[in-house]
Image (cartoon, rainbow, N blue to C red):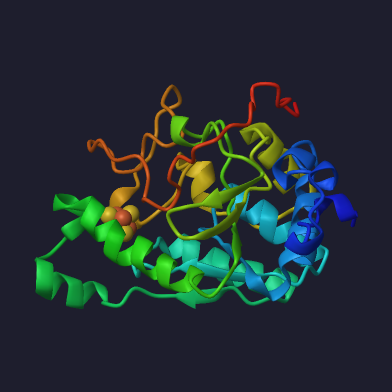
Length: 254
Ligand code: SF4
């Protein structure tokens, strides 16, 4: 760990010695970024995973290298059976615990208040109640969170930095895989025989809740199966951040 990646204390602040972690880590490997984050934030760091292919890469790195990083998943109660099974397989494979974070209401309680299948009528409200609100409550106890987003997934993610402020949730956000492509992700999963969701092999490149995820055709965007037929493309967990850093020179790994 280098001192240049550590934020200076304000009493001895030397602007010349300060290097923005986002710039310093822009070309670092995901493992190096994870190690830096674990070192820098300690127990104030957490990783929110939805068990996507990218999330499995990060769980593999954290597990194999025994990084002391807290992990949790937002269990909406509406995940695919294959996702619940993957959750158990990952915990067993790496001998680690991925905490369950649940919404305030069960699916049944939500239906009693808002009517059945809120996701089909008001997906933004459903995501707010089952994903965004529980995430906000959870992140309040941390200074930084790790996500598995990649820049090339959506236009909203195109400017994501390796380390960036998350104004929406009031902490910092660490994105170790921003520079990776889909090919990088699958190369890693196959090379290290990482457990992944079998639905990926059945036409589901992006997997969320069961009612809001459908198969995609070969010519479609990977996230076309999320909230199909609605204008919605994000859960609301990853707002597009303001950025002054030019990422256009970020190299493609493969
Ligand atoms: S993805 Fe669908 S079911 Fe899941 S929280 Fe959002 S709207 Fe509700």
